[in-house]
Image 1: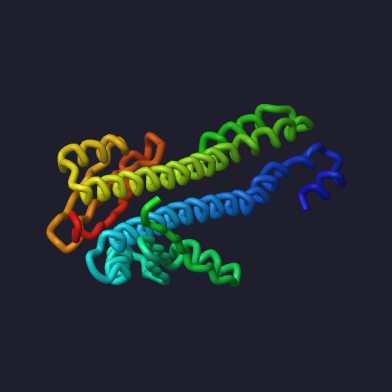
Image 2: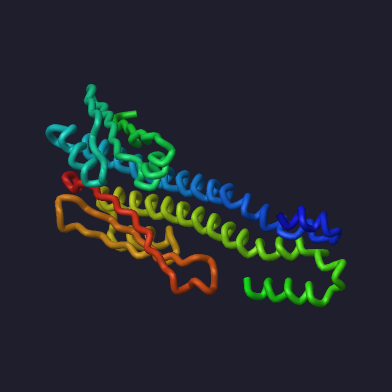
Length: 128
Length: 131
């Protein structure tokens, strides 16, 4: 409105407010960048936790005197994950643990109409 | 923001009427700069939070595994504390698992917000069956 008025009245006010418009246009972009980096960070931290849990669980299994998978299950739970697979072949133990995606990621995925998959990690222990 | 507005106002009244609009885009951009700076600082802080969390997790896992191997508690604690500057390490050996908690208080990288602090912590529990 001010631009049209400015042209009509012949003065040089046409540019006023242009930077404000640019800044406002930038805000969604900044919010997007912000949430994208927050999601990436939360996922990286959660993935590391799952990997650590798998690591601890497979060590517990490998050194259990009886029932390696029960030991792996206890270790997985102690680190906030659930044991989804456990196999023992000869001297090798392989375990997979998983946990839900971080709350932040679930919430953002929910806003976008999706459902993030659980995070999981597999670890193997045995003679080289 | 108030400073910026004052500058804008002074320019308008001081300049001749025809040139009133000159530089207003520049000034409006100058108002936007603090906002952009704040967003940039927030992004950088977020990144440093994620990095710190990763370092805490690493320290906790390494400490837990060292303790499970039967290494000396004092040395393990020293190494964990050295891994993340300012970190506190708590070892709990009372339950069926040895639990290592590494935590650190962080503040935004802005002098005015040093009172704001948030605690990051990572915890690893390792069964003690074989320890």
